[in-house]
Image (cartoon, rainbow, N blue to C red; front, side, top):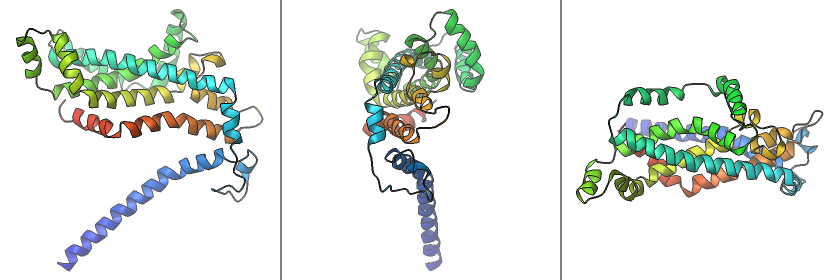
Length: 280
């Protein structure tokens, strides 16, 4: 009996120790980034380095928040990410409803194509998308960025919403039709309110992908007034010097929207992910 208890204690200790090490591994870079944002640029290279600075300063944040060009990066990121999230949810909801509730020609083929898009490395599509966006006259525009981001957010969104709707019984739709309603009524009056956790999970994921996207935001924009936060951080890397404290401050400010979204919708986000994984 003592041996079993000892083994359980050791196993529990090992699990806790592993979790603590994992938390330190994930958290220390964030703490260092936060610490650096409150240092002067010269103090960043202090030897030995200090996690807690002796000359605490908000100068980096003041520089970022007092610079109209830097604030424009945040505005652009908000506009693009919110538009991508709303449009992705709308299109994915309609597509997921069709895949979940109807049979139509080439359904399996289209589903396979959607899944396969997830496996394509985005970097291989930079040149084709650049040519397409330029040909359509969408280069250095919000629509160009929004439509491009949707190409990478839609497949996952469709897969997740389809899986979530598959967990809801079709009797719900049939009961609406018996009462004289249509499939459109069943979707918006019954299925959408029930599917809020799944929609929130997909929405948060979509916002995160669009907010953090760098490659296409760099390739498909030319002027600073169209750049997003990831590009704004890169622009702080000068030819002869890097503004490390401002880069860290901008990174912290850029992380806040995603962090707030996750904290606000944490339970629904996790519930939506797990519910969508129950039945495909």
